[in-house]
Image (tube, rainbow, N blue to C red; front, side, top):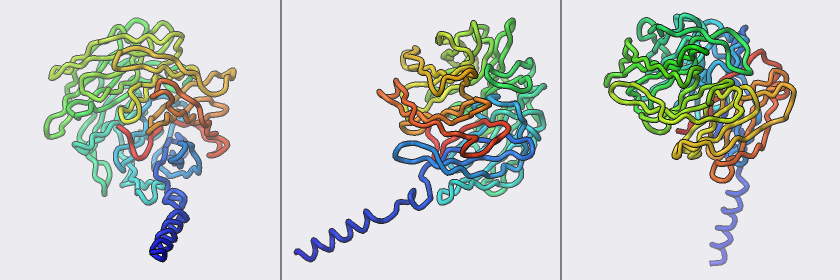
Length: 398
């Protein structure tokens, strides 16, 4: 009996001494953002520590396309991850790239096939439907348009026909805190069931924001004839995030004199949208983007591109519960470019031109409060880069 106990203790001690998969250099979780370099764009992979959520060990992978300096903060979905597939726009040469992530080598995603032409200018946002193996991107340059691709895990992207022009879209300036060309469209996303594809187009001081909705057939064919809803309460319409159902979505409307965010109700099969509730975020300068994941938190986090502030919205009550500041208070007052939730952490890519960071926040009080646990120094750890955008986490949350 004594010898059996000794053997058990020896095995137990040995198991504790064995290096974990993460300690051997194979991280269980990875963050990706895009180095939007005109001479050659790349995806930068960062190891996520599974215990405290912090970032380290940057590794670059070429996307095969070119970036465009100045499209900073053009869209929150310039990179999108689903399963082991990572999609990224290349605004400098108007292409879309698809990379595949090996779970045994997630720091080095591999380009699948060649980047595919988007047949437009300045592709800024991409959406993917795993149900139909279809990726669609929106060309933000004028004329704004949408193009879709079939997705092959071995061969890459194949165009599914000509572009769908977004008639009526007008060019608009970059968001507060961003610099770059005027853009005619902002965000593109499938609803949770992949029964429709939505595109946001901002208006101006005298015209409403426009929501384009393309029906998707049961065979996965994206309609060429969108339903267009005018949203006069939301002139500067930017991002759209669905709230775990096809019917409800949170959208943003940045800038002085605008509310910051709103909840939309979308009717089916008409695909018409109406404002269910305007959510005013006091003193917002550029509430452009939203991080939301039902796996991580009941709250939606509205990211201000014009200042270091995050509005915390409760979709269950359609109300603002608070505004959290972050980072160092500097003369630039940099805001956020993109953000993603992962388990108990919120990751936010900032747009400070002199000292860009990825801020890591721990969700406190059930997500109602944020505690900043790291400011990952991009220039100090990755090197000086021209422009940066997009943020994705592997494995992805929903």
